[in-house]
Amino acid sequence: METMGRVIIAIVVAVILGWGWKLLNWVWLKPKKLEKWLRDEGYKGNPYKLLMGDMIELATIIKEVKLKSIPVTHDITSYALPFDHHIISKYGEKSFVWSGTRPRMYIRDPELIKEILLRPDEFRKPHPEPFRDSLIGGLLVTEGHKWIKHRKIVNPAFNLQNLKIMFSAISSSCSDMIHKWELLTTESGSIEVDVWPYIDNLAGDVISRTAFGSSYEEGKKIFRIQKEQIDLLFQMLYILLVPGRRFIPIRANRKFKENVNELRSVLMAIINKRKKAIETGEGKQHDLLGILLESNKKEIEEHGVGMSMEDVIEECKLFYIAGSETTSNLIVWTMVCLSMHQEWQTRAREEIVNVFGDKELDFEGLKSLKILTMILNEVLRLYTPVIMMTRATHKETKLGNMMIPSGMHLSLAMMHVHHDREIWGDDANEFKPDRFVEGIANATKGKGSSPFFPFSNGPRVCIGQNLAMTEAKTAMVLVLQRFSFELSPSYKHSPFPVFTLPPQFGAHLILRNI
Image 1 (cartoon, one colour):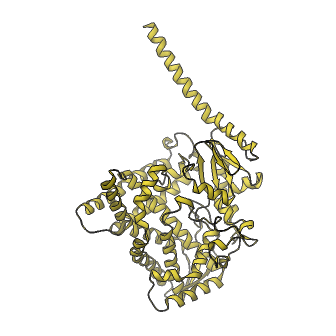
Image 2 (cartoon, one colour; image 1 turned 30 degrees about the horizontal axis):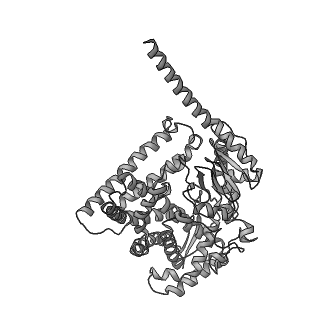
Image 3 (cartoon, one colour; image 1 turned 45 degrees about the vertical axis):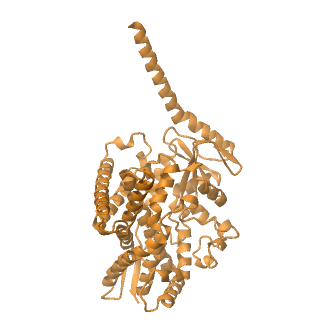
């Protein structure tokens, strides 16, 4: 018995020492090793602080900046990315920050960013990433063979033929918003209005119709829940990287967990209802969910394995965040930019008259809108929906002339590249859509199309970018046909990031009937 007791004690001590070593490596040894490599490579940043890194300073700066607006300008990088701007201004272009125990090195060379995005198996999405993982999954976060399979299943939902079918739903949602604005301007012919809530609801309306079709009202409920989740996450910014954060008994944490369960319940009910309809042959549903389930069914029949119920739920959540946020931001910043630059508003309206005349808006006609496409590209450049992306190495990996160690996070500074004077010229912070007159490849100062990636790049380029552009063009055509608009005196410029780049104080414009 005495020998057995000694064995048990030895096992317990070995386990404690093993866990202790892992803990020490996680909270101190590995961060300091990565910090040494960065400094040896000429990168500069704050010294490592135990567990939290730069998170306290980051949260403090973000909360301070969120309270303010800025002068009306397109030079927005210091406002949209205040902490990153602070670090880069302090330490220079070769700098890094700490996300808890992980250092993130900034990558601002567009060729290196392109190379990283073209090698997704070597430069993967960081796992875990609390802010992202609390809200979304699906194609955005899956990796390897699972991502390849899921992309294959989801792809048919976004092909050109299905986009044409969805166009009537998109047009209907846009027309509903226009009708609301017409009612507001009926008496006086003009009105000051915050257009942002209408555009935000429009994007939710479109994704609800195109994703869930007949379950449109339940879709709107999903949209409302996810909006609340984003607000709750910002309330918990200080504790996002704290181990066991989800167990901390604060109201925001409890409400977030309640919403997670409610969201899953609503989505499961919609998906199960649609699966039964498909099994009983109740006719094809030409919405994203219907096409996804048909594609998944075919994959299972042909190869035995497809998406699980949890996988489908995650893709549906992603439809909302990626689908609605990106498009609503593009539309609202287009209206703001055209309010600031009336000559481009006039040119876009004249082109729409030339293309459509008195005819009803149609899908094919959108392709002829060259000036509007230039405008949208310039808005995507200045107010890019993907302001920063993070990738991570999982083994020693070569990039350029560096051998980056395993466990390093890389921040791809998309917004900085989109505002870089060396790439776009001295007018990089000005609104000049005619820089795209000869296409994206000729818009830069001899750098080709590599520095322009509003929807990412490489194999993991945004699958819904054509849907987003179709919705933005449809909305802007209908708006420009019926209204002229300008900035209101009460407008406050506030392009502040959540997942994308919404105007946190709204977009107060003066609308006038044409």
